Amino acid sequence: MSIELTFLAVTLLIIGSAVCSGLNIGLMSLDLHELRRKRKLGDNKAKKAYTFRKNAHLSLASILLSNVAFNSTAAIVLGSKLNGFVAAALSTLLLVVFSELLPQAIFTRRALGFIAGLAPLLRIMIIVTYPISKPLQLILDRMFGPEGAKRLHTRHELGLIIDDHLDEPTSELDEDEVEIIRGALKLSEKQVVDIMTPIDDVFWLKNTVDIDDKMIDRIKEAGFSRIPIFNKALSNCYGVLLMKDLVDIDFDTKPLKNTEFKLHKTKIIGSRTALDTMFRHFIAARTHLMPVSQNSKIVGIVTIEDLIEEIIGHEIVDESDKTTLIAEDKPSPQPKSPQKLPPLN
Image (cartoon, rainbow, N blue to C red):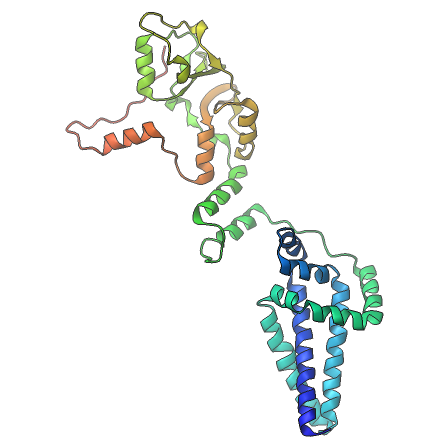
């Protein structure tokens, strides 16, 4: 064989060995469960790679058998033209640099793309080596069994994964979506007592109160659309009074007795209730406001708005809040701080 043909043969054998080495490291670096998720989402590359990664022992045996065949043949071809020591040293150097180091460094950067692109070649390797690789697969499956169970991420790990999307230009999640997901992940770590409005800051009515025009003026001044009705001892909630139910009533001529209140049922929730269960409580109770109890006494209220604010990480300012803010921003010769309204007697 001429020097030119020897050089060409060795080059082709080293390329074949490099491809096998890259396929080996690339295939085993892919996570089987991540490939399964991507395949369900319609990722064509994941579909091609999933079959080989699922039968990892068969693919691994085929790749390694092919790799050893390329390496051995390259050493034999070089040995036919050079003396034993030179051939061994040169083949070792060429194989380490060009068949192991470089391809593994390259394939690990885009493992999925390389595995999907070279899927036909990998399939040929499996077919050619099948009489040997298949028995090896059966032995390895018998010895080690299937791949380990799916590894689930902890809540804190998921938070770190989500944080990675903030500074990544290729991420499909924008900053608001990341903030919402992070807020949702932290719900189970917090309790209702952390977000509730204390009873001292709550505008509420006693169950013995009658509503007349003066009382309506005070309710309007408070600016709330839902008003809880408690007993004097704050041990029981009779329901929630909605302002919209009072719109068509003429209180100048007909005050509303406490027994005529149209109250909407709600549910008292414990102060230690975790926030991740609160949505189910709101849905089951069909209400937007719940009293919070501690040691059999109502100590505050929590609304679905409080829960949403905790998830999105920002306060929701409604129309009445905006009006208050604008009024406070305007210069006034006699600034007036907002007053807390006591419970109505």
